[in-house]
Length: 188
Image 1 (tube, rainbow, N blue to C red):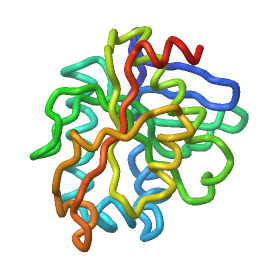
Image 2 (cartoon, one colour):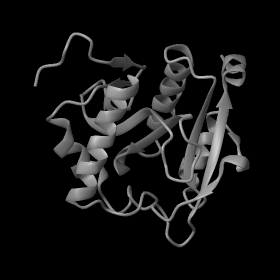
Image 3 (cartoon, rainbow, N blue to C red):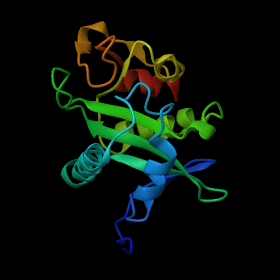
Image 4 (tube, helix red, strand yellow):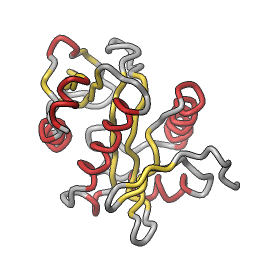
């Protein structure tokens, strides 16, 4: 499937965030649908869950002009996972708020890729998509995820927390972090 002339692509020093291609899906699931990567995301996804996730990502792009884009390493084109933006839609959560999110393959962890991609996504949220505030959601046990939220300069927003057993049935509390446009601009 050829990319259209309006295909999304945003480059950072080491990464490209770009629209999905048909051939990305098998590789994405191969490298991210693992017990370690999916530990805090409800566990390894079966075929139905993978199809539903794909449909959601494609609908975000169609409905809002942004999604959780493919993250690839520029030097060799390796698909590292996804990172990007959506409108928060988790049942019980803060509906409609701009949300940044990421999921990277395990062998890409600890190399600064998630921070680089998430920083680019935040810049896009504020500069291109006009967000006044961006949230990020995770579970308490996912210290890597909320640690990155802190390193990005996001602040804890307990008032946006909610319960959902979709990701961690033992501790169903979803915790929120947020960054306002003014805070983003003061960091630039």
